[in-house]
Length: 523
Ligand code: KIV
Ligand code: ZN
Image 1 (cartoon, rainbow, N blue to C red):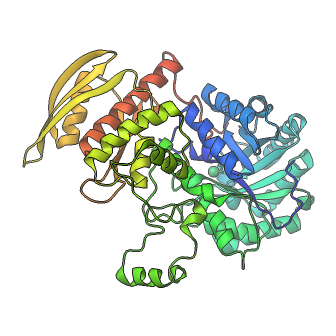
Image 2: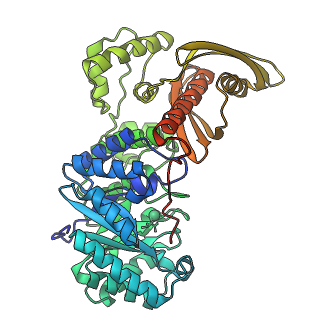
């Protein structure tokens, strides 16, 4: 069991790889999950919810490999309230030095109606499943899903049952983002005061952001006595997302005068992991997002710039360095050498071997020839782009002509499994024509779910990062690419997504879906 002896310490439970990854389209590859888990472990996250092992073979493998690799964090898996889920979860987490089974069931009237259980039947199920989990693992977390819409008496009753059955952490999910700070604090406080045995366990808060109150609700829950915050990087998650890790951690740090609780997070690792999660999930961070948004430390207006130059505390309550931003950005150019490039990449949190550096250096020089200055964001885009093995399809060349009436013509040449194929298509604008030409070369029924352009640097020679998300028979794949030419970046992102789809299809075998079941199948 996670032993919280210090009452001022708040445990950080990160669910980017479970609740975050479950949000439609945010699917990550196995290697990406391992990478994110390593970064979370390294930054001091106390508990990593690594996935939902019974959901698919892929989830199971990811959770068990993360469990075997973790150095400091406790590794947790999710399980519904049945023995098969719990056994599978234990199989996945059991090799971790510190492990946890997290089992849950929806307790509100609406959620009880899904499996059609009476209050008594559900209470019995909770007793059986939590006891079963506790017989396997000494650290068990139990969640009454939709707790904030569960009747008070019934909530107290089921929490007491779970504690008696051996739960060591009681998580109170605000599943639909319905609560508000005053209520959130009060709920936790009253539960701790009322439920027998509550002082023996850790209370956790798990908030969704439907009304934009997830961070405030989580901090209020801590004020009410919760000592574990469940959160995700960049607030990734179902619908409007989960509580953002970077927000609660930096709020506790910056306003420690009025919120005297501490976490074990090395905040200087925040920016790098935020960028990696944005890249691998294909969910870019909004420019004005608190803490990690591109503009979070940018001061544009004359008055603000003047104030900043006199004293940065005039307009900054946190230092960019506290979250791992270099503060000042020293651009590299075409005369910069390999050592300078390696040094800059290391500052940005990338460790590159000699061979990888050689390859990146060639692409860096190519970029530096086209741009006057190469900024930090350019390098991040360069590192994020094309990091998938584009085995099947590769862009050889493309030519696009735009007409004034919106019609465009694209001629695209692709290497398809080693063979060059060319197609010319017309479309509603250059991107539409390009995607049509790619589809003419490689016919597929993938449906375009998302197309997003993100100019990551300023000026007309900016690097544009393009994200493309494709869906085919329930499988989702995201591709990203960065280029000074937006249409080229679009073509490469589309091709990268197609390559990932092909790879997943091959791995899954004929007729297989990417995810076999969802945690919403609450039977
Ligand atoms: O939001 C929620 O209720 C959940 C549970 C599985 C804890 O994610
Ligand atoms: Zn959730």
